[in-house]
Length: 329
Image: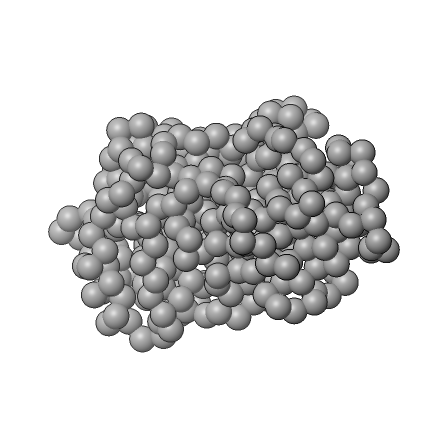
């Protein structure tokens, strides 16, 4: 039986960068994100079929390479083992945005895959179980199970049983908040997040300091979310982004995801905030800017003055995983 699931990307305001366990995707620190609306989403249809001799994966209308297929097959093995089935699966997946351009395609991708494949295998997982499963495909996918403001708790157990996401606040409480995305490049990044963070943990001297400071920023943002108060989290959001990219630059060899246009955007946001704090920039592992704000028109007007921006997308805060009867095959 085939099932189709849709999951949206999430953009972290407190970043996850670095693992304490590579295999289980257990993070060095907890992280907090907002889930985006359907403009940044992945739709995935899965069917297990006894006639198949190997898993089949089609992404954005193209058969994927062996490396990507192996990663998905290993993830499907987790589900097969749990459901006690051997059948291979056909997986068709479509992104609504460029894959690998720093717009969190692996977050929405593995959240949608976890939801569709577990249902197709006959499993009825709770949201907590789904978050733990999705995490094993891509760490940030654990957060895309939920809508609104979400915290992925790092946990302490070696088996990862307490490392999962929880919803801090529903998307209904954030109708006033927008993520203005400035697309600077839609090319796939040269260094994957997975490879980059492993090198940072090994070689960055700044990384230890980041881990010491991140707990304070998490508490600031948790309190702001509790009070539905965006303005009081602005500084912490930008500090955390700056901290992560400083650790990347401190990696041997340096990892540089932001470019000249990215830095112009960060500077322009700081200048915009000089009279009244209305916006917070954050950059994931890529050059594209995410500017959270409650005053989108002012931010968009500012961004239109900056050379090098290819596209501006206005995203609302979105919902968690949902299921669809419209299958992709």
